[in-house]
Structures are given as C-alpha cells and as structure tokens.
Image (tube, rainbow, N blue to C red; front, side, top):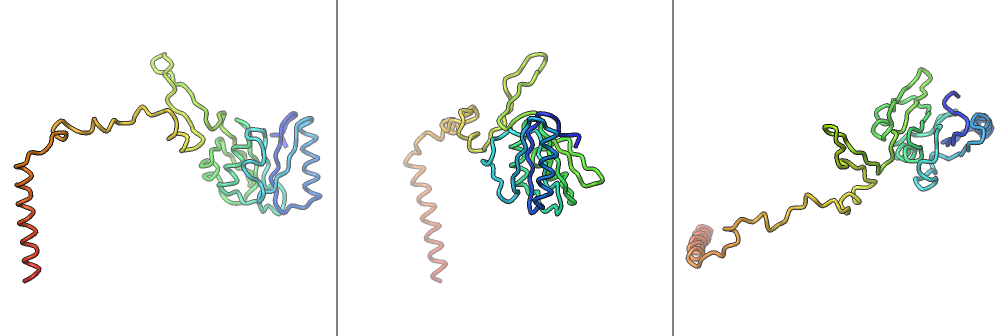
Length: 201
C-alpha cells in the first residue's frame, strides 16, 4: 500500500468483515506506519465525537470483503472531519461516488479499475479564513467558513444590518390630518353600505 508511510495515523472503517482478515490488515499497516497508530471503527457505530478531529493521515474504508460499508453523506462528513488537512481517504465501492465525495468536501478524486477511490481533504480546516491580494495589497479577510450557520448569524458580523428608521421617509412620519381621515371614512362607509345592501337583495 503505497499511500501509507512511516509515522502515519491510520483509521480503518469496517463492517461485517472476517476477524482474521481484519487482524492481518491491521498487522500489515502497523508494519508500514512504524510508530504511527492504527485504529478500527465500525461504520455503523462511528460518530463525529468518537475521535478527535484532524487526527488521521489516512482513512481506509470498506477495504475487505464482503465490502458492506455504506458510504453515506453522514459517514463521509465524519471522515472528512477526522482527516488532517491534505489527509487521504482510500475506499472500495462499486457505486459511483465521485459526486458524493466532492459534495462532502473531498478533492483530487480518482478511481481505478479495481473500484478503489483515492480522495484528499483540502489543505484547510472548517473555520479557516484567508486574505486575498488585490492590486498588490492584502485585503481584509473576505470569507470565512463557519462551522455552523448559527455561529455565522450570532457572530459580531452585523455590518449589513439596516436601521429600521432609515426605511421610513419624512412623509411617513407625519400624522395624517383630520380631513383626510374623514374623507377615507366616508368612502369606506359607502362601500360597506353598498356591500350590505347588495347581499340583502
């Protein structure tokens, strides 16, 4: 396995695999990582809080027969959080996962003839920000990936809030005069009277 190298922390995601085969795979990877760690997680049990975020260099998923791991959006979202920036995901799957992997934040996705996907986590974390150079000057931070939508709304970034008082014009703030109110009342009274009369006849 060329992707795994010395010092790597590897996560193996499995489901209904044969115990002897898992043991052999773990021993093979332990030999390759030489001092790195190898961790097993069942695909049906793994949760976002199960491991520290950004703690694995490589994630192997569905590697052994009978290949029963379902690569759902939920599982892939957990994997992308567990991988370090530029970490790699290797998985076996017969279904076309290219679009699903892209939508879950992976880049540089390749698939070979043996249905092995190799995908990479971008070089930044959720919550990262970057400055853009415009005309040779570094602009203020112009984008930020907040971990939740709620944080973005609750944050101090309220520059675009409009003052409600500025929505009203000068004439909206003036009180109507008595004569204009009486005129409107007469019109409404006539409409009401006409409506009632037409219903009675």
